[in-house]
Length: 116
Length: 463
Image 1: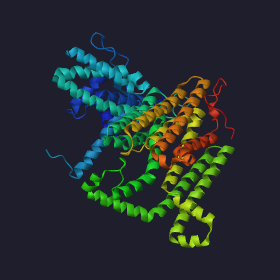
Image 2: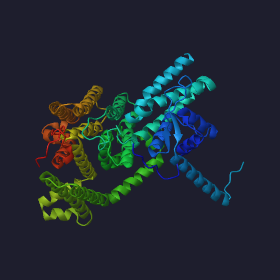
Image 3: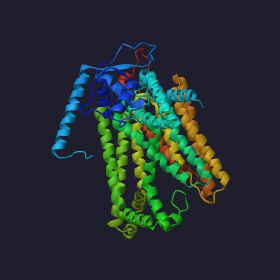
Image 4: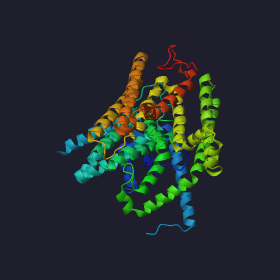
């Protein structure tokens, strides 16, 4: 399938969190979802539609790829599909992180900070 | 219900709901999504029991609605019936269902009114107008017109029809507090809402003050729209003789509209009627009177008319000539439905009978075009088209004549032709629009199939 270009940054929260989730290794859909939920302390709860819609677009843009390797079928359901980050996906994640860092720096310069 | 059975039921329900997604999307990710949802269910039950399951379903449904819309809009082969994405193909079943939903809304409203429920009038006559919103949304995102948008478009046309004269009529009659039609608000409402009454009065005064200016402005806008339409057609493809006839007709119509607006203005402010009578120019008088009668309704008709020609031409190019029965089948019922006035004097059985006929007619006019676009052979399509059109038009003529007779019996004798004309005039306008669209129609070059057979319904215009 021809790669489609993802829209320029900023990435959507769902896409960015999926990228972050896959940064430390391949995962299946439910694994990604739980990881995102844990990372954001329940702030982002993706449903199957949002999750696989984002995955579809990320696959098309070449940010992630499906892995052929499967765990032992006795340990896992064979219907699960595993995804991992591509080199392009890692670059995009780094670029988005840099962008957010820059935004945070500007906010701090303007003394816009979160009061706890 | 045991946990396992509730899990199984949820899984099956969710599997069914996946059909709402575009086929290519659900085909690729369907099983993975079911697996993910099943995992979520297990987790929800384990952590919070039934309550967790309920919350999960609420979250899943909101996710489903958003993602279904997103995927349909993003799908390159959207199966919602986007005209340019699926040319020369039957209306998909999802499209058929979407077409039927607004129709069912109308049914509910129409039947509800029989029970004397006022709010059903809003439901039947106004709420469904907002169905144009998703159509416009799809058009805005995809720049393509969805075929399932024809019903809302019919309603939109009806709205144009309404806005022109009904606002004024309702304002006038509401202030006079003597307008008994359920279309208007009740006298009690006006008594308890004086601020709305004051606003209505101000609106009416404003409308009366600038009535002629609005007419001229609307006429100029209409003229501009037609010029743009013609320019677009000239740029896109060569004109057939039929298209020239159509264009000339439209231009003449526009000139007449603008002229009537100017004449109205002049007759009101520059010359008095007495002076005109003094000239004893009967022809001129007659023409002036006609020009004064050219009200918003005419302009609204004209706008709807242009719209119909455009849609008809687009449909014909994409789906063949018979596809134009789609707007004809859809728009007629929506135009007609708003025409059944109720009054305390009308016997109840007449209302029931009229409503039954309306429902039957709507079914016929809706089902026939769907039958046409789903029929395999051209012969069957032609037969279906002929039957559908004849039944629809026949019913319109018969019921309107009956309707007119039922409500205007004392003045009826000797005026049959006039009443009949008034009864079927919107349909005549529609039919004329369709004929003009046919004249505009030309077989697209790409419509030739590889086998040399013509696509269904594609016949070169003789115009």
